[in-house]
Image 1: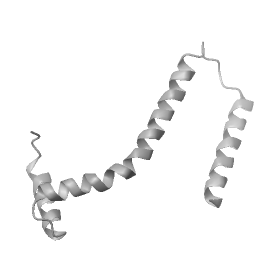
Image 2: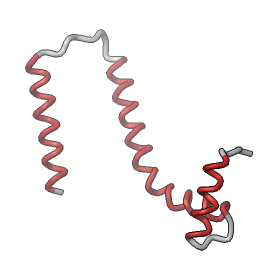
Image 3: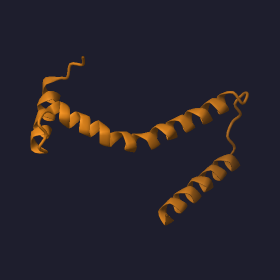
Image 4: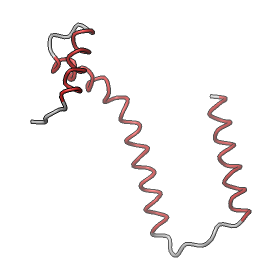
Length: 87
């Protein structure tokens, strides 16, 4: 069983009451039920980033970034940002 700080317990009780739940537990169950689908894409992104980091760590010794490397990276970020703005 988890113990919450008193201020957090009061806040959860207030939210449960304000939103018409019979109990703080009911409020939290509903919150997590709604949160799970939203959280899944973030978890997948985190796993993808971790995989890329592992791949980089296992790829051999590091080499310094050149000015061209930085420029290619900036251009890539600009392209990705522009695509997302258009979407």
